[in-house]
Image (cartoon, rainbow, N blue to C red; front, side, top):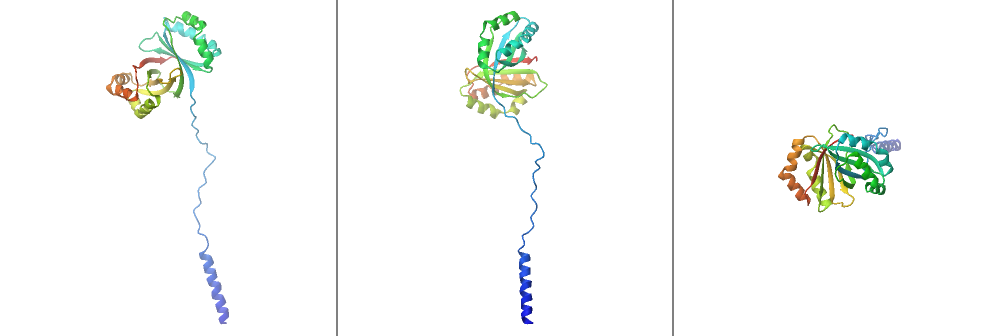
Amino acid sequence: MKQIANVFTALLVLLLVSCNNKPKETAETPVADTTKPVAVVPVFTPYKAMIIQHTVKDFDKWMTAFNGHDSIRKVNGFTDASVGRGLDNDKLVVVYNVIGDLAKAKDFSASANLKEVMKKAGVNSAPSISFVEVIRDDTTTIPQQERIMVTHHVKDFDAWLKVYDSEGLAARAANGMVDRGMTRSLDDPNTVSLLFAITDMAKVKARLASPEMKKVMTDAGVDGPPQITFFKWMN
């Protein structure tokens, strides 16, 4: 009888030990829902463009001639074009051409054919032509069509960009200027053009004339007077 009791006690101890050694239940780890689409932010790819500025005798006549020349531009390396009209001088034209073939575009810009076309369209000033690399470009749709383009030369692009970015989009927007684009000249990478949408013209002009703006440009290494163009997109 004593042996049976000992065996029963041993079995009871073994049972209690095995119960205590069971792994504790853990909370289930939630599984990520892979059925929902993940938003993909497109990576911006720099591209080349040509910017032309000149004056015309009659803007509407010039615009008609320009639109009729679209197929010729495409054959000669241009894929898209936008036209701006000066705000301070409504005879001033700003043409922004996206380039698909740089070699063709350069040859065409220097051709006798283009000079003849411009003459017939009423261009009455020597055109300013710049070939640029577009390194920032905000193409989101906004209601504002008035623009300011600021072009200047800097001592060191990377140093200038650091100061420019530290100023920040919000600071510029508070002064009526919304960032829309940035380019570097293909002939001189230290020549930079900035494009802004205008939300408040009075604030923009006050900012450009302010000592604070001059200090920012000096600190950034701008080493010459900026070229400033006010215009409005027409297409």
